[in-house]
Image 1: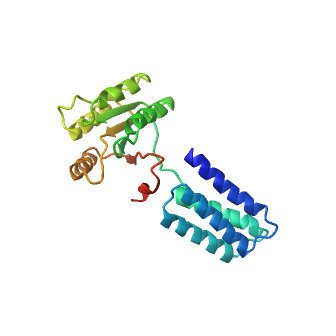
Image 2: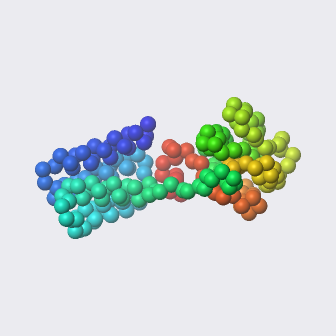
Image 3: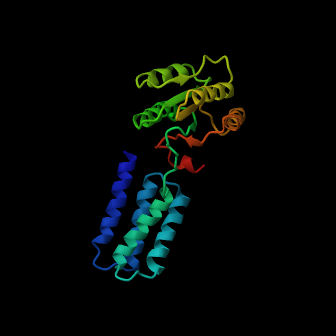
Length: 231
């Protein structure tokens, strides 16, 4: 819902300048104010908004127009490029070649959705012809292994885990090794949620990463986290 509202506000700001008969400095500044308002109302970090709007205004007013391109079209292009740069220009690449094992370690705070994400990711890759498996390295949350097992069972995805008698790092290491031996393409490691102030848990996560050497570490966060993402 929040993203839909932001998208609508940004779209309205762009359509507004497209309807302007003349795109001069005043029109550009008005567009920048509309963009700032839309982003701030969506809880985007103030410093990010100011930095973004400054770049848009400077480029829109100072860049030399490409031949055959109107000021209006150039301004819209600048807005698109800067928003794309802010959100990420290209997704992270994962080598999904069959027979080439990839390990994906999921991290994040408590309640961010790592367990359900692990099951969804495994199913996603499974539907694309890759042998997928999950390692439950969360021994702190009661019922974590059982929840993951139930989610994965519906899709026939194997899960390695335990009842908490082993250390999380040991479970992760043994699980990855077992699925590696069995020839799986994608191994997803679901870890316990942890906060930046929990030094012991952060240290455990670092040790686990050093032990299993994941191909990729993916942070799972709540899409409504807002300005907390900046810290």
